[in-house]
Amino acid sequence: MESRPSSLIPAMPLITRTKQGAANFGPWENVVRVLILVWFMLYTLNAIPDVHPLVGRIAAKVNYWISYFFVFEYILRVLCAKPRKAYIFSGMGILDFIVCVPFLGMFFGLDWQILYSLRIVRVLAIFKLARFNETAASFKKAFYLIRDEFFLFFSVILFMLYVTSLGIYIAEHEAQPEKFRSFFDALWFAVETLSTVGYGDLVPITPMGRIFTGVIMFIAVSIIAISTGLITSAFSRVWQQENVFAHRRKRPSDKAAADAGGEEGEAK
Image (cartoon, rainbow, N blue to C red; front, side, top):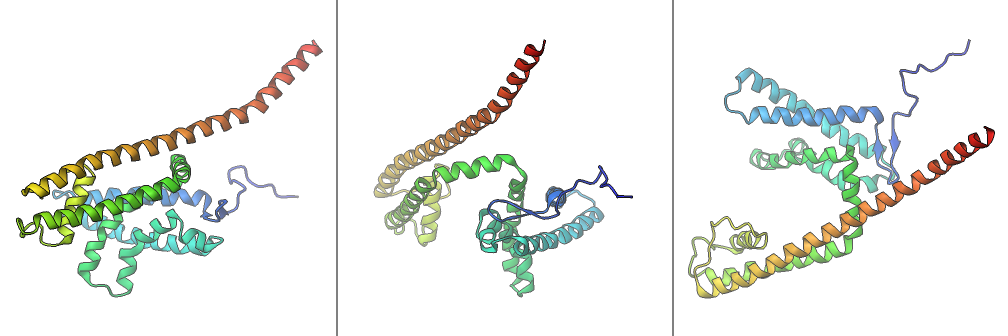
């Protein structure tokens, strides 16, 4: 008697690959998704001061083992990807590696203070969920459409950060040596100004510094407007393309249904 596959067990390979060669573990991807959410829930518990000490210790222990699971997941994806370099240097591959950096650092004997400062990269693990979200594909398509404009825009941003940092340092260093101590303090002021955030911890007080900052503020507003226009245009083009493709996919089925309806009418 021939054995038939059970309908409860889907007939699918354990490991499949995308067009880019990245590994997909089928139903096991749901385990990764759940562990990411559990990981952040446990980190949230550790951030609550009034939580019971026993709950905090259990959460820290479970979080510890989930962290090692992420390292295992990254190694497994590297081994299963074809070609491997395509995954390693892809956006998700780099993100997976960055999340593993604090744990890999322990094996290479990094200083405890360095490891503690690297804990902030664990927050990036939430973006690992983008692998399971169809919306992330739209972001990828939009970025691909404006990749040339984006790199040009990014180069302009870096140039403006350098010019702003150097200019405000020259204008304010002698007047405020305790605040503008180095180029890096001026760089932080440049980031605040060009992003239009302005925390107020660094403020120009010299006439030259204020005039220079005022000009940079107008440039910053223009930069924000240009970046918003680029992103909006890219998403608009992606959504239009997706709607057109969806419409084209429906048309053959609609035609088949119409033909079937015509045949039934002739039969009657």
